[in-house]
Image (cartoon, rainbow, N blue to C red; front, side, top):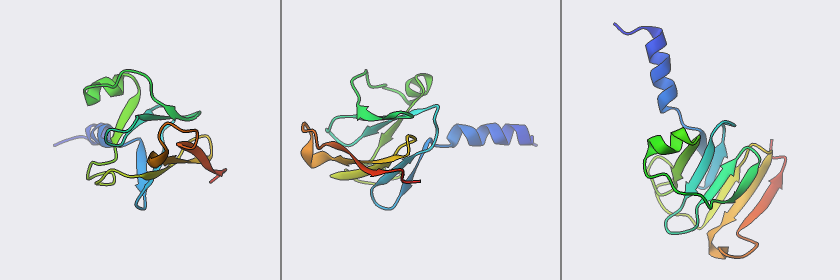
Length: 120
């Protein structure tokens, strides 16, 4: 018979650091972990507790490598996220702003824009 302590530990290992809302919104929910948003062949975006920007670091190959760096890979094409690549993604970050990632405008200043201030 398993103890409650073991079950709690098992649940925290499977818990994600983000949730999805609707068809194209990611909500960052854990200050300790940064999200690496992967959308096909487009540039990778990092969502941290202080905001959002293009990711210029080395992409972790394994999920365990990402966890050691306090990061979580979020591949939007995976079935548990959105199930397909997106042209437009909204990200609610922990800095109380909602950002709009418009992948049709990659390489311009309009790629990452603040969509809404103080969404909470």
